[in-house]
Length: 401
Image (cartoon, rainbow, N blue to C red; front, side, top):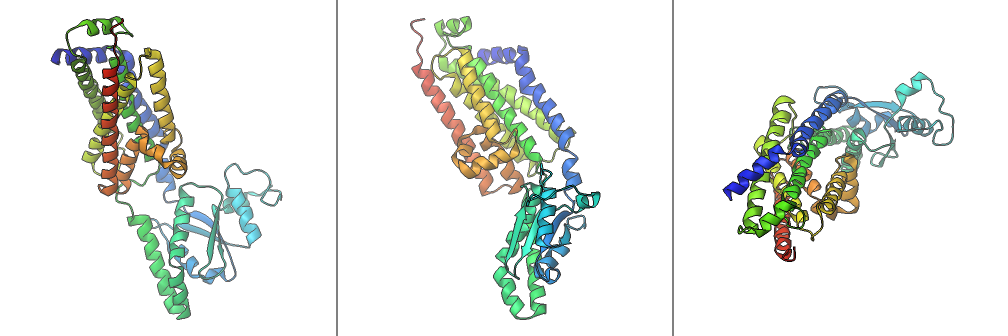
């Protein structure tokens, strides 16, 4: 098997397309992501969120006191509050909506002055009573998510606030301070990882894509062993060496190359570009290696589907990888959340989603139950794909060739 391993290692390094897609392309894409996203989060992460407050005696409402005292880690105010009436509040919300047209919510003209542009808000908070607080947003991005979380945290303490209000102003202010502390804990201490940059998800998907690209190399090498696809396959089939030994040598060769490529990519992303994936670096490396194994197992499985020619199997694999990449959020991060909400089972069997979930949980929740669950799913999928591929390989016979 040693000679088979050496032969296929040489074959991999002599194949320019494998070198480009397996090594060069991820480095290029990682560089593009870095230059596109590196400054966005740092510029936006301390930007004050503009909100409109509607309600009688709103300035004296305990929730407003909470909002006014919220700050980012650098000490800057988290909220930029505008007190106004309902009609004006929703007009400003419409101004802040993405792709807003020239007409407002009620059809009024939005030919506005520059002063209007500076007042547009991302959310309208209606204070119906001390415990009845509602929120209306125009989009669903990072800031709106934070604002929704703050309102939800306040609502969870609504009865507590109400009981405190009945005891007097001092008790109500103490309750408001308690809510403020809970919100700060949620925003600042509720996640175990080091990097809260939402754009790091694109780098998670980049590493997942590298893992899955190993499936293409695996497919190429395995199909070349099959007698109905190449002259090399005919000679292999006629040789006295068992198919299992040949395939084991190929698997080890592809695993070696993909592991080397992943190692180079991690050194480049972590050491040179300085990307912070969050969590512990050894665990990031472990997750990457397990992802490489999962990608190789996917290629191994597809390579043994029927006795189709290479073009058909490559098309099947391309559909699986591109479709899986799309559903995992590689092209639009929000799509993964949509899939999770409507068809979560897809995210459990989609290799791209499984890999990115492991990275995500490592960053957000740290090494714990959720991370280990992701690792077990990866191992289970890998074992299942290798087992299915092996069973299909035994069933494919070529005596008539």
